[in-house]
Length: 113
Ligand SMILES: [Zn+2]
Image 1 (tube, helix red, strand yellow):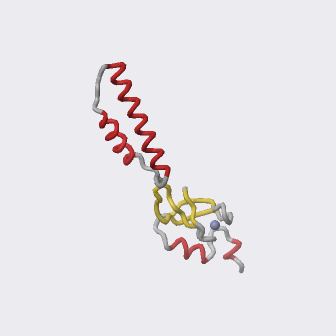
Image 2 (cartoon, protein in one colour):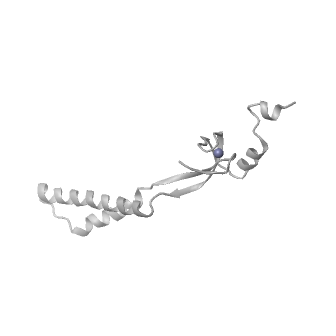
Image 3 (cartoon, protein in one colour):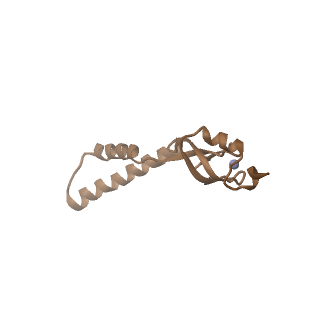
């Protein structure tokens, strides 16, 4: 009689409606409301923004700077200075730092993972 709520296989209607809006779903537990189950994947968020991209870029620059320094000091191979800069730029765009955005079908809060 009260099979909608007691049967664990049947999701409440508002959750099904919310899930139906998305084509991709994953099993996630919501930390806001405690819902555990399928969640719609809303999209992807690029985490490389603000100060974090600068940290990443200058870390890469430092790494390639050290590589070029070692190449010159240890092996006598002298690369032009801009090569390290170019490599840092290339790797900066190669290394993706995106997170998926999920929408909790129960409380509608956004989750990043
Ligand atoms: Zn929730």
